[in-house]
Length: 591
Ligand code: GLY
Image (cartoon, rainbow, N blue to C red; front, side, top):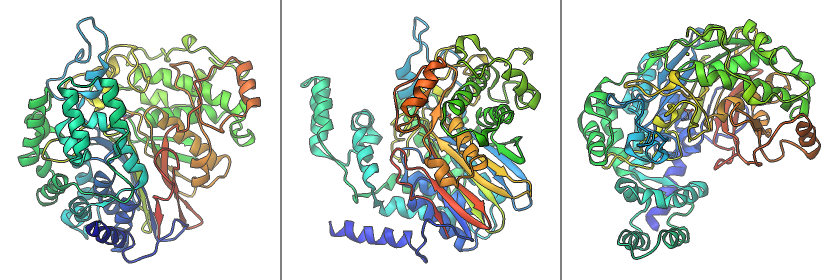
């Protein structure tokens, strides 16, 4: 217990090292992430003269320790950034399908989608891209003032010595006991040698108790509480190997051996060759305009940037600023525009290394006007009357963090292992969770994946292909050429519509980023033909008006995506951090 208190003090000291930063507007720089400890790691790098890219990479490695539900070494993601010289870059470090994957690998003998295998088996994991991506960002865009070891060192210390859990994390670990107990590595880390839980598991394995009783009794046991020190020794060693050997510390040697052992023992597909061959790629960013602003976002294999620009192009034809946010007029228009864009997503988008994405058409103002002819302002359009645009038939638990620095660099990453804690399997001996990103492929035409998204050939499984994503790290640049916003979100298919609504709130309704993030949101995605809505987003009058327009609703929800970002206004940095889900909105830091 004494040790816990001392460690608590040590970590609090790291957090406040050299400053008493507050979440208020400031002029030197800012880091926004889902972990206050990880954000402070990034701010410390900025204070030591690092640029936004150094700080972003340090924050990313720290998140792999502080936020096991979504920060990761075992997943992948996308960077969208703008350098001080004005260059806009996007890096794709999305996971890739292993060489031995194949189109029907998630279908059972009756050709039905097997959710268990697609989401919870070792076959659900794509080849991780995060380590390659973070190192590439550091090497290509870092300031050159730090070694990789210096950048990863805070993450190593946090993993080796541990850090105090926040209440939400303790609750979340306990919430997944049943799943963690299915896996040896996860049991070692998240069950914390709890005798009562381990003996229950033994009784269940020996068929001494029924599953129902087992789950109920597991639920009643709390292993973790706020302030407990969470130590990850194996993860600290993996991070040390990366710090010393760079990408080879992950894709070759001991870490690669541990990943491949884990796969071979459990029927997974990732091989040594898959790991050695993994490479992140710079992609052409999606660039669009909305009013006088330039929008820069992620292109395929993310659908995020394309859909975002497509929807903004359609909305530009209306006076959004005059519409009341979340009025029936606004929500109706948003829903119709979302319907059109997500219908296109299902057919036309996939990994650009495998599929010819008709981006130029999809993000053109002309196409937006043509698509708008399909909808009415007076009535909901049934989704089964809307298909993807066909005039070009020749073609087909995530987290966001960003940094802005005083030199003019802005960088944002959205990264994921798909579900919270990915497939809940830890690479035994290496201490990190595996993704279940293979479910982002379309396992079978028009059969929804875990996010209810449907797809077809463009996003079918093929060896070495990257699954289509919704992650949307995005920048907004004003008419003076200043980057005024960097943002992104977690939440699968809801990411794109959350980023859209935040941008509208900032540009059209002149809200600060925090208020824009706080504002209750709605979401729709063509299929299912429903409006998803957060608590307090729609009052009863608006709901009735929308029902009169023939809209149908999913049940009320508390949490349509979790967004984080930074705004630059009048020379100061303003952070935005979501209060939805497990977050308290205090994770982002300016200095
Ligand atoms: N795994 C969710 C996404 O990439 O959209």
